[in-house]
Image (tube, rainbow over all chains, first blue to last red; front, side, top):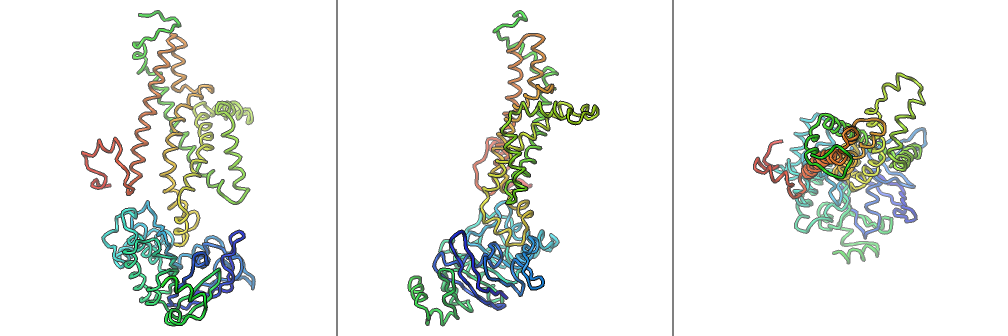
Length: 250
Length: 255
């Protein structure tokens, strides 16, 4: 479903991604962990072309991200094509990024109505169902500022899901939450995983990784230095740096 | 009763006599309408110009930068005179000249001038919206245009409103410069009366009173608008808001 081939990305003189390659199957839940500055967020942002890669290629569902293949050469996609591709990749951010001038329900239906061109009545029905599923059926007409962090993040997840994406990217979804609110968001993510969604989750929540991940990857200084199923990753890490990292956070 | 001679005497009765004079009222009305239309024109130009200025393409940002530089750097009076006198000379067509009334030219000149100042205000407003909003909108599949229209500009509006209010108050007063191209706005109306009856101070007072009325009413409207826009942000209620609390608070009133 998602393939990265030797992805490089630099910001000015700082090289953040130094040759990242990975392959993620449909329905897989992959957790990416690592120290800050390792490039985890940047990798996610390259996958849905919020950042442009400098070298290497990324494919989502067989389609190259940001570029179209024309007669063996790669031609940069138009803004509209990139937008269309992004519509099928859902992303949840650390700071929620809900639209403060819209109600919770409006937040969720805005993109389906204006991007997918759904009929408003259908979008409203789907939106209400989605919000009920994440446990916020009674907050439809509230504004984001009136909700707790955990509630806002659940709205953000519902908003991303409303576009019926093929894959969901999570960029440290619980890092900005008070500890007692983390659980409710993780519950939503776990049920999403159980329903078979392809997910890439950048997080420090190793409990979540152990419970739900199919594979855990460690990123450090712009490369993936270890990956494997949770049992092997946590109990039998091969790399020295992995052991060091685990000793610090567990 | 004082003689109608130029003097430093000030007679409040004269002020009262001319306060509701029809020429004065017409002038005040003209001032208000010119200012309103010109401000709307200015905001529109400001939004377009701000977006152009933010473009990475120099062919787009260049003209916008020139526009801002030129119209902020030259006096409004000269711009008024330029549009009013200069354009007819370019076309040299009596039909066009006839259509270029001082009313229309004043609105145009004031609007174009205002757009240059609004550009910076709009740009600051757009940049005040945090980047995460654009990220979220893009990740949902919105194009740049849709993101701007539905997500960024509505939020930028809240930041743009207070300085725009200031600009409008300045516009109400700047409109008086249009007397130079023959527009009979409020100041000109006062002048046309005192140049006949010599009650200079009194008529200036009349004009000032009407300017104060307009700017004060507008300030109240702006304050109320700002507080209404703060829905969901827990801002304290305004004077007007507290006065109307008897009719029900914002949450209980059905919109």
